[in-house]
Length: 269
Length: 282
Image (tube, rainbow over all chains, first blue to last red; front, side, top):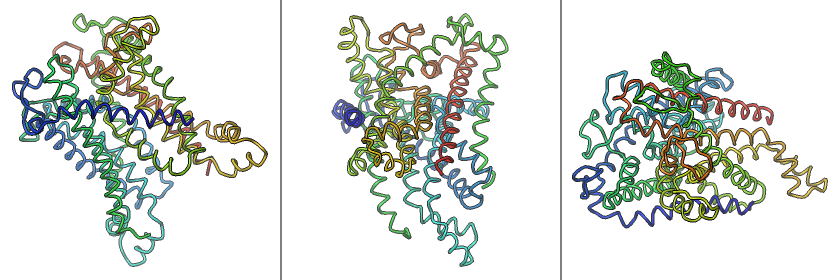
C-alpha cells in the first residue's frame, strides 16, 4: 500500500523533474522576449513570446468571463434557494456532469458556436470556449467554500437589516474570499493548460494578437505543434514552452496556498 | 441571477443539441450503427467508419484502468487508514498538483520517458517490436493522469465511513487489514465503483497527452505494443482538413457526440451512485 502511494508521489516528481530538466536549458532570454521568425513550424530563429502573451490573454479573459458567470450562480444557489430546492440540486448535478465532459468536446462545441455566430478562429472564440470549460470547475470550487459559511453569520447580517444582496456581497463573499481566490486560480490553471479546447477555436499564429478577433497562439499548442517537427531548434521552442507552462502551474499552486493565508485575515472565525 | 443559474443545466443540453445538429448531415446518409461498426475510414471516398477509433479508445482506456485502479485505490486506503497525519497533509497538495498539471505536459513527459522505455526496453523484453508509440505508452500516461481523480473520490468515500464501525470491528479482535477489507471497503463499495467510473470517463475523453504517445494508426490494435488511434485524437488531428472534404466535419462532430454521450452516461451513473451513498451515510 505504501508502495503504491510512493508510486503516485514518485510519478509526480518524475514528471516535473524530467520536464524541467529537459526544458530549462531551452529557456533563454531571447526565447521569452521574441516571437518566432520564419514560421513557428519551420523557422529556426526567435522565441515563444507569442504563445506566452497569447496564453495569458486567453486564460485571463476566460477566467474573468467565467467569474462573471459563476459568482452570481454560486451566490444565488446559496442565498436565494433552499438547500433542498430542485433548481439547486439540478444545477449542482449539471455542474458535476459538465466537469466530467472532455475538453475536446468543449472544443467541438466552441467550434459550433463560432460557426453559428460567423466568427473565425480568434482570441474571442477561444476565450468563450475556455470560459465554458472553466465554469464548472470554478463554480463547484466556490460552492464548496460558500456552503461552509455558518448559518449564524447570515442570520446576524439579516437581523441588522441587511438585504439578501448586501449579505451576499458584503458578508458571504468577504468571509469566503480565500476560497474564491483559490477557485479562480484553479480555474485559471486549467484554462491556461488546456490544449484540446483551443485547438479548434483560438487557432495559432506567429504574432501577438492585437484585437479580440485575431487568432492567438497558446503555450499548450506551442508545445504540441513544435515538438513534432524534425528540427531541433524548433523543438527547443516546444521545450521552452513546456518549462514556462510548468512554472506557471507550479507558481499558481504555491501562490494559491500563500494567498489563502493572506486573505484569510478578513475571516470571522 | 436566476437566469444565470439555469445556464449550467442548459449547457449540457445545448452541447448535445449542437453536436447532434452538426452530425445530422452524415446521419441522413448512413445509420448510426453502420458508422460505429464499420472499419473503413476513407474520408475522400466518403467512408467514415468509426470502429477502429472506438476500439483504440477502449484499448487505451482499459490499459490505463488496469494500471490506475489498483494503485490509486491502495494509495487511498493507505492515506485514509494507515498514514500518519503529516504524510496525509503532505500528500494532499501533491495529488492536487498532479491533477493540475496540463495534459500537454504529461504528453511531453510521455514522449521523453515512457515512449523510449516501452520501445527500447519493455518490448524487446517481451520479444516483440514496438516503436514505443503504442497502447501501453498511452495507458501509462493516462493512468497517471487518472490517479488524482480516483484517489480524491475514494478518499472522500472512505471519510464517510463512520469511525464507530471501525472501532466495533477492531474491538471484536479483527486486525487493521481485516477491518479495512471487511468494513471500510465493504461499506464504501458503491463509492469506490463511482470513483472508478469517474476515472474511466476522464480517461475516455483525454486528448492531447494520449495523442502524443499512442501512435495514431487507424487500425485495430492486436496487442498493447501496437499503435492505436483513439476517438479524441481523431477529432484533434483532423480539425484542419475537416472543412475541405464534404461530410468530414459532420463525421468528426458525430465522433464528438459519441464521446459526449458515453461520458455523460458514465458521469450521470457515477454521480447518482455517489448521491445515494451520501444520503445513506447521513
